[in-house]
Length: 399
Ligand SMILES: O=C(O)CCC(=O)C(=O)O
Image (cartoon, rainbow, N blue to C red; front, side):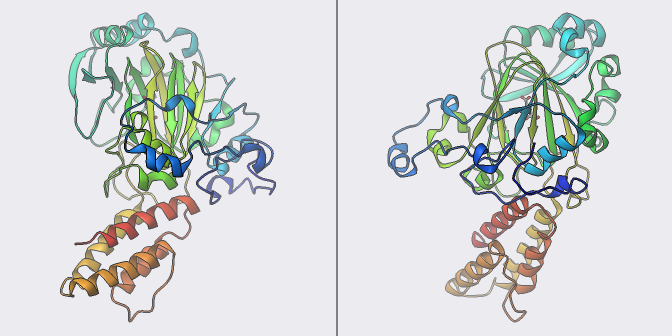
């Protein structure tokens, strides 16, 4: 699989993300043209119409993620280099595909084993409104609830140190870990693994979020739809500064969907979805059946990860965290200016940051803005630009 006609240096392929126009989705084979997907909206009409449209499910008209088969280790590196979501089918994930039903899981993991699950009266779990509670219950009871299509969700955490370590199927569920394995073509993901997360759910739509780690979501039982947005859409998706979880529920919000460029991936048992880093996504069940999945988070960037602990694989890159500290210094530097002057400085600094312009040292806040611009060097273009845009906006919003 190639994402364009240029040869990719495979040794480095995994960090050679290319900038992409926001209204296209990149290829999974052949040439760019083969892989172009039309934007699904007509922005002018939608802008006018949207204020009257409040909540209609819109997920069923979306461009679909491409399905591919993976032939080699190099082909997987090409997938990473393309930086687009893709469904990989026809791989051997191990005996889990045949065995992981409710009875088997209860028998192997123990029906009385206590687990902490998200439980809600709504199918739409909402992280911001916290319309769910964490419930401790025996695993057997949880699996039965999930099987009945109740709104329950298990996202495994490390059984030893849930606040300090990321979860690993091998360490936390050794009784079933041998049933699951990534195919050899995905050696790169296995070698750079951050965590492997067991997820079991009933009828639940999970909130919109992005992960900073690359992600292979392996659907083992049941079917699920995932709606994904390119990184360049993040500023339209209601992510508060410093957060990787959105305030919006885009699947029921036609206005948001129309302003962005989502695609959909419908996963069946045995399908693997590659979710590139910093691609917001929301998951929805296809019916009230139990879904069982494992997702493997892995590092796909050469550098730039936050130095602190990242238990969930979603801690923003170092450049964003450092950039926000630079913005605090800018705030102090312009604190005593008149409102007009401060607005002019903020506009100038924000513009320089988003356009990657280095300012002369005599400009107020220039050192800080220049450090922000420099910190995007070496990152994939779309990810660096996303963080620069986000920081530029935060400079403009300084009060
Ligand atoms: O399986 C799900 O419901 C959520 C998966 C997900 O969000 C992820 O793998 O990051």
